[in-house]
Amino acid sequence: MKVLVTGGAGYIGSHTTLRLLQAGYDVVVLDNLVNSSRESVLRVEHLTGRPVDFRKLDLLDARGVDQLLAEGGFEAVIHFAGLKAVAESVEKPLRYYENNIVGTLNLLNAMEAHAVRQLVFSSSATVYGASGEMPLIEKAPLDATNPYGRTKEQIEDILSDLCAADHRWSIALLRYFNPVGAHESGIIGEDPSGTPNNLLPFIAQVAVGRREKVIVFGNDYATDDGTGVRDYIHVMDLAAGHLAALGHLADKNGVFRWNLGTGQGSSVLEVIETFGLVVGKPIPFQFAARRSGDAAISYADPSAALADLGWSAHRDLRQMCEDHWRWQRKNPLGYES
Image (cartoon, rainbow, N blue to C red; front, side):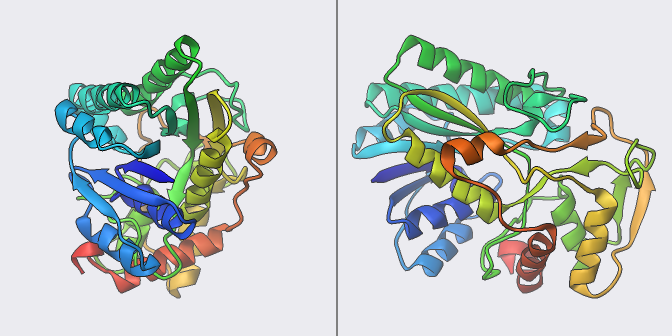
C-alpha cells in the first residue's frame, strides 16, 4: 500500500513514517522543510533499511501537489503538514490561516481529482479550548482559543462537510495531546527551530546546556502543585495510533474522531522532576506569570480509540523522559549534530 505523508520530515511525521515502513507500507514524504530537516528522513531510511521517496514541496503549490497525486498508486494520505506554534499564530494569524487551511484545501482538491479518498488528519487537543470538563471526550464542544487551534477546528469542519457531501471519503481526525519522547534508538527525535514552544524540548535543551533554565508559566493554578497539568504521550505510541486509524479506514466510510492520549495528567513540576531524575541532576527553573489562554488542566479520555481501534498508549512519563534525553544527549544540536 502506497501512502503519502505530508510533513513527513517533521517530529511526529518522521516517527510515523518509520512505523509505516516497518509495517510494510511504501511511503512518499512531502515536506517543505520550513520547520523540519531532510536529515530526519535519511535517518528513518537508516533505521528501517528501506527507501523513502522524498519530495520537497509546499502544499501551497497547488499545481505541484496535483502533479504528485497524478503519478498514481496512492491509496491514502496522512496529513501532518502545517504551522504549529501557538504564540506565533497569535502574532501572524493570516500566515497560519493561509498555510494550514489553504494548503489542506489544495491537498483535498488533488486527492479528489485523483480518487484518493482515505485521509488521516493530524488534529489537536487545542480544538477543545479551555474546557473545564475533564477528561476530554470527543463529543465535548470545540472552542479553540488561538489561531493555530482554530485552523485545526476549521479543517475538521471542512473534512466533516466533505464526508457529508460525498460518502466515498474515509477520514480520521486524530486529536492528540502533548507529544514527547523519541525513538528508542536516539537517532530521530524532536528538533524545534529556534526557541522550543513545548515543555519537553525546552527541558532537554536546558539539561544539555543549550539554555540556562526552564520558564514555568504560572504556579497559582488550582492543581496539586500550582502548575499546569497536561496529558503527555510518547511519540511512538502516537505513531502507532496513526497506523491503527489507517487500518480502520481501509473498509469504512465516513468521518471518525479519536483522542490520542494516555488519560493521565502530569504537572509541569512533575515533568521537570522526572527529567532531572533521568539526567541525574536537578533541572533549574524559574516561575513566570501565566500565559493568556492556558488551561489549568487538560487530559484525554482515550477510551474511544481503545474500543474502536484497539489502541492505547503504553509508555509512561519516565520512559518518555528517558527516550527524549537519549535523543538530546546524542544530538545536542538536533539534526545539526
